[in-house]
Image (cartoon, rainbow over all chains, first blue to last red; front, side):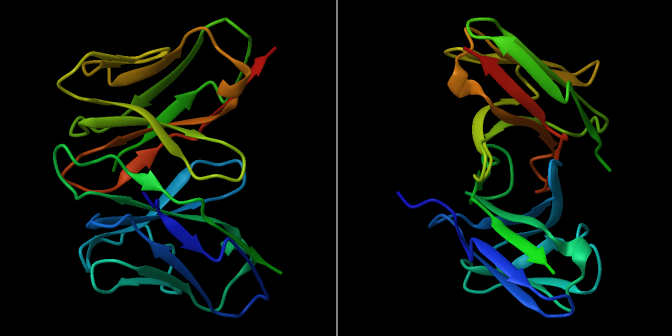
Length: 116
Length: 112
């Protein structure tokens, strides 16, 4: 079946522009997660959704970052007034739900964001 | 919050040898510990996971052990093959809290 789909796969933009990254989770998965991976580094948690609600957005680096999820499916991560330090791979994952027995997260291949 | 440390950062082995990667965590409430393999240009792929009520789990050439008292867990790969070469990440989470905390990764190179 289809896995987690992210678009675009690559994005190059100028400093100061806004960008939108999209994530399509696996069908039926109610939990959705956003992570950021800088070059050669581990994954940094940004935010997760259970349905359309975001119980934990503690990882968002600043108020330039926001995310939403509508219809319990597709999610968009928006970065306003991009800075060079925002350059990274943004990874999305989904899982069946949050809670015992349903933790395995399935990742997309990410969006590689480069800020010039 | 949770903190996960992973060692070594790089590991090189000969084909057929075993590889061991170790992680420690800080939050005693963590109860789920997955391991992911990430190939170049791809997202992480789950290879094995273990829950806090289990001490060891094995899947063919891959095994994971967990010591809750010491708060550490390890990935063991036996009979390594060149296609095992990748970056491996450990993670820890509380299954009721949603997010996972990841280690910084281990780059495994298996030499033919």
